[in-house]
Image 1 (cartoon, rainbow, N blue to C red):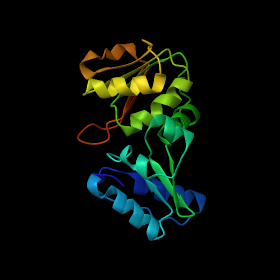
Image 2 (cartoon, rainbow, N blue to C red):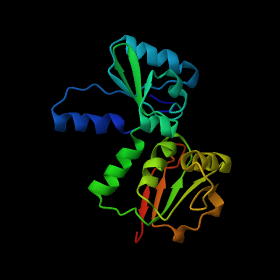
Image 3 (cartoon, helix red, strand yellow):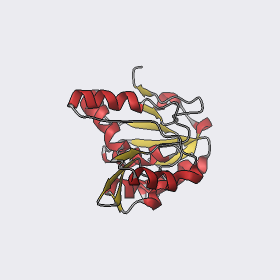
Length: 199
């Protein structure tokens, strides 16, 4: 559920997961304007939906609809996964754990002691910064078109002044200074990408 959703590859990805794990799954893109978010979530729940993935621009707005938040979602201040049990809504944020599992288990990327740059300061960035910091990088920078948003996420996550973890303007990027770069721009012409040292 998002606005827009046409760029999403989630239906294909989840259909493949379902096939691999022997599950029956119906997964569709739901284009929902911000002013219709609460109505759409409640309707999905009433009609027997089991869960929703939440994407741009709803990850922060859906926060207020949730009855029970996971610690990850609470820390991130953003929700990307809803599940419905006993007429209540449970919210989680799997952005960070999903990224780390892919980097560590699937790709064998060493983040401890590395210099990390994140491009973008939306709900997905909120979800990945905390887990990335747990990997003890040397430095983590968040660059965004609107520097205030990047600085807010850096401040929320770190809870202290620390020049190792800062928000900055996109024009301040020195590309050669980073071991790992992750773009969190998922639409409007900014594709997600990963850059590792040596690429």
